[in-house]
Image (cartoon, rainbow, N blue to C red):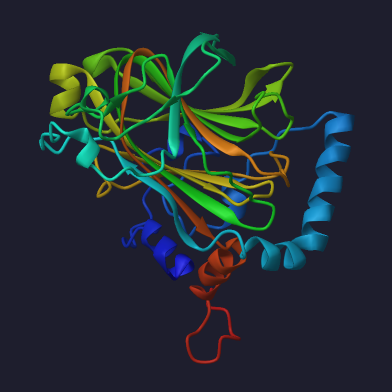
Length: 334
C-alpha cells in the first residue's frame, strides 16, 4: 500500500481560501490542510526536567531513526494495523456457535470510573481481568454501534512509533453531555510521562450543543488539558435536533515524535474537516504501547475503528512535492 498517496485524500480539493472563523483568532483552527505549518503551531512550555527529557529523546530519535526504521519494518508493515466495524449488519448468528471458525481476539474491554473537571481528567479501571471483545456476540452490537458509556477498549496488538507513524480513524456517535477519549503512547499503568489523551467533549443538548477537542498530558496520575479548541457547528443536523445525536469522524495522525495532527469531520467524511496541528508538545516513546479508547457521560457509541501504519518522512515528502514544479522538482512555485 502506498501510504503517502493514501493520506493525500485528507487534503481538500477546493481552492477557495475563505475562513469564516478568522474573527475568532484561534491559532489551532484552520481551513486548508496545505497551509504553512507555522500557522498551526501550538507550543506548551516544559518544566526544566521535562524539557531536558524532551530534547534528549528527540535527539536520540533523530540519530537512530534509520537503524530503527529498518528493524521496525521487520515487525510492522505499512497499511492496516487494526480494523473493526461495530455496527450490526442485521445478520443472525447460527445457533451452533461451534461451527463458527474462531478468530483471535484482538480487542478487550473493561469498565471504568471517571473523574474530570474543566481542565483535568482521571479514570480507574474497575476489573482486574479484561473481557475479550467477541464481534460474534450480538449483545455488544447495536444499530448505533458499541456503547462506550463508562467503558474502555484496548487493542491488544502492541504498537511502536519510535520510527513509524500511525493514523487512528474513529467513527463516533455522541449523545447528551458526553466525552470520548483516545489514549496514546501509554503503558499499562497509564502514568508514563509520554502518555497523552485526546478528548472529544459534547456539551449542551440538541440545538444548544457545543463540541470541543482537548489535548491533555499526564501529570501525577491524572491528565491535565493543555489545549482546548471549540469546533463550530455551522448547521444543526436533523438527528442532533431530534434525538440529540452528533456524528463525528475523528482522525489522529501521530508521527511518533513531538508532532500530531487532529482532523474532525462532522456528520460524514464528505464534510470539510477542522484541522489541528500541534508540535513541540509531546515526548516520543521508544517502547511498545497499546491504544485505549474510553467513553463517559450520557452515552457515546463507536461505530468503526481503523488504525494504519505509515512513514512520516514519506508523508511530508509527498506534501512538499505538491509545491514543486513537476518538470524539474527544483524550482519552488510560490
